[in-house]
Length: 206
Image (cartoon, rainbow, N blue to C red; front, side, top):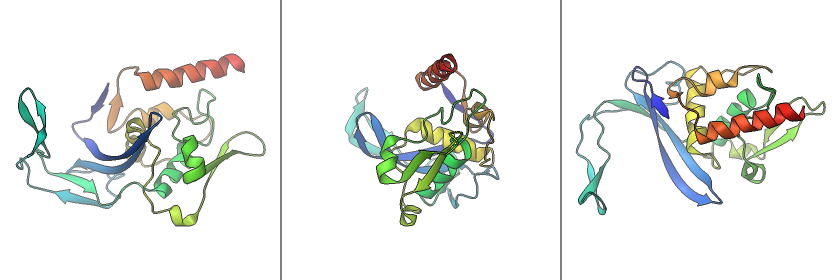
């Protein structure tokens, strides 16, 4: 279960472009209440006012016999002017998915996907085998919207920004950065169980 903090609640709008083989392709827009945290407010945030605005009724979708109401927000909030880009994701990967964490696992949260290799961001092992090295395939991709990311990836990215976008050294507690912040992961969900399983398998093989 994921719970946004009331004092610095950050939500985001994800526009799904395509789904293939259970991998989500998404564009991410960050949003937060009108009092932003310093670390996230730099994402070219703009204020969206008119709290309690009239919702849009989707008359082609019904719930308990009534059309679904969308778009009504009961508070003033801020939203990013731009989608999260390939350059943004490259910086995230280099910061938290390059070096082994305190469990000895690199990129335990799977923030890099194989689809990125051919599309946006290449990954290779360093010559000494100690870390992953990420490079953008073409500098022209820097400002394009990132794809091959999931809903959970977006939560982790937002929490990382909430902590000030730190660059983690080898042995750092990645969980403390990605699982806590604007979104609190308070239960062991399927995604976290998978990460835990990967860590257990790694410890048994080492």
